Image (cartoon, rainbow, N blue to C red):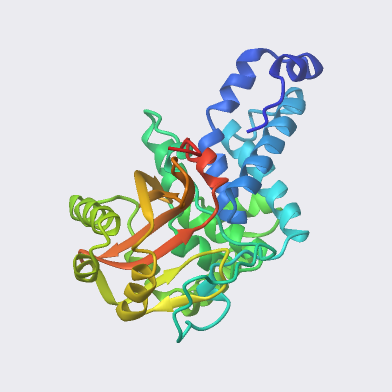
Length: 330
């Protein structure tokens, strides 16, 4: 992550290092906020950095009698995100762009030109002692929710995040967006109606991983490494979905998913457990023929329901490993 030199910015602003350190404590929740708005960890990091720079440079004009530092930072961050969204198309996962493939293709064509949703490492969401800060950073980042947000216009997206995820009042959101509480409530109703059509399952999502889910992930990791298709079949729901951005095609149903995984059974894999979007995840490394090392290959983010895996989102993007604090080679 690129960070500005605080000493230089503080000198320019005429404020002390203590103010820079104070606003820095909000970085994890601002990162989560920008990620919800953009759906990209790389874009979110850039926009949080821009937010911090703007805050440092405007510190001498901050009026603490009108708003808290937190509210002021969210105003800056939201406006930065809204400006960015004017120049960017919406991000997506493969299931949003077409129907499932009826034929199992073992080497699907990739489409890096499509702006794909990216996962966010849980480690970047912070783990401070303030429960409110933790909730603000870790709520509303499940992959299904991030994908559903992409169906909303930018301002509706901001309203829904501020009202439903961060629990701001209509008056607070109206003040931030320079509009009226009535307009905020109207935008929220439209956003709810759109999400009810796009992702009706959102009301059953949780931001915590249960012991049962951990056990399922342990079995997934073990059966995948052992190419145990029978054991893997027992873990998958009948309607399981497998998607692999940047590949455009995706598979639905246990038979198709198992057939695809079986085509990879002869390869040598190693794995490291991790977590993303408050969901269990596994980072996989692959060793190709003639090589003595395992190279970063993909991060599997798992959605578990009723002790079975209902969705596997495989991000085949080695550059993500750095963001997860993982080595590129084992």
